[in-house]
Amino acid sequence: MASTNEMLSCPKVALSNGLKIPIFGLGTSHDGGYSHEAVVYALRECGVRHIDTAKRYDCEEHLAKAVQESGVPRRDVWLTTKLWPGDYGYRTTKQACKASCARLGVEYLDLYLMHWPDCMVPGRSNREMRAETWRALEELYDEGMCRAIGVSNFLIPHLEELKEDCSIVPHVNQVEYHPFQQPEEMLQYCHQQGIVFEGYCPLAKGQALSHPTILKIAEKYERTPSQICIRWSIQNGAVTIPKSTKKERILENCKVFEFSLGEEDMACIRRLNSDTKLIHLSSPLWKG
Ligand SMILES: NC(=O)c1ccc[n+]([C@@H]2O[C@H](COP(=O)([O-])OP(=O)(O)OC[C@H]3O[C@@H](n4cnc5c(N)ncnc54)[C@H](OP(=O)(O)O)[C@@H]3O)[C@@H](O)[C@H]2O)c1
Image 1: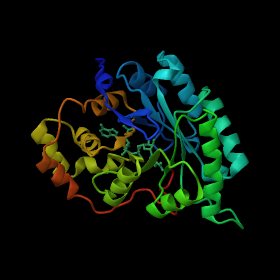
Image 2 (image 1 turned 135 degrees about the vertical axis):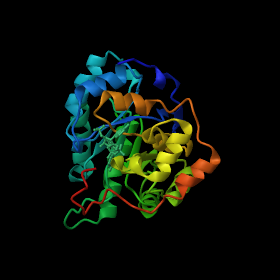
Image 3 (image 1 turned 135 degrees about the horizontal axis):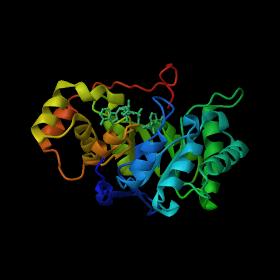
């Protein structure tokens, strides 16, 4: 397979603390498998420099091996991992962060996210638990163990409460974002508050790839449906983390920086929004 340096031209988005996160990252997950070879290929051949994972995905140890095997220096790879709600709480958060670092074989994380707003601890309110957990994250940030800290799946009221309860505004909020799920209010809110908006499931888990509008736009630009969806996210300023376990698809997904969608086509995709969420805590689908 031909190699490429597509990602060398990958733009970065500035966080409120001045760090810069590559706008394109490779997603990983336990849902649909994990491919060691594909991650090594993404790093070594495609120039991908941003990987998204989570304790929940159970592949942090595999990633440590893949990053090492790729030969890409640790400092050149942006690593995001997530704290699982089962670990929320001051002491347990600190332990979980250390454990994630150990599994990933790193001394620090580039970004550590609270994976979900709620954790359901008997006798404690979710708000209380979020605040206590966030304070531990703030300390991990101050100590340099996490270069940036953020949240995932938080809604505006969760972010407003956190602002009242704690001192550091999250650097990132990672939420579901694809043509069928466009939380415009959250995008605007993040923009106003200086929170980087990161979108997961940019392909709607593959479901967007057969939509007639996406197919039509793909044909017009002589691109693939996946490239259209990823490009659309990027043009909206969202950090995006498509997942694939297949080398040829990773290469395809990386090739989104030498074309741009016209305003009319951006608007066509905007009209596909049906507020459809693929990830729900209460649903058996939720493997976030
Ligand atoms: N914070 C959260 O709660 C949360 C929740 C969900 C996901 N995430 C993150 O977001 C990442 C992406 O989400 P996701 O994996 O659920 O959805 P996604 O990236 O929208 O879609 C992934 C699916 O699309 C397929 N695919 C990828 N590239 C393709 C291409 N070029 N052509 C055709 N099919 C393609 C993949 O299959 P193959 O692997 O077979 O190629 C996989 O089935 C995850 O890996 C994870 O890091 C975070």
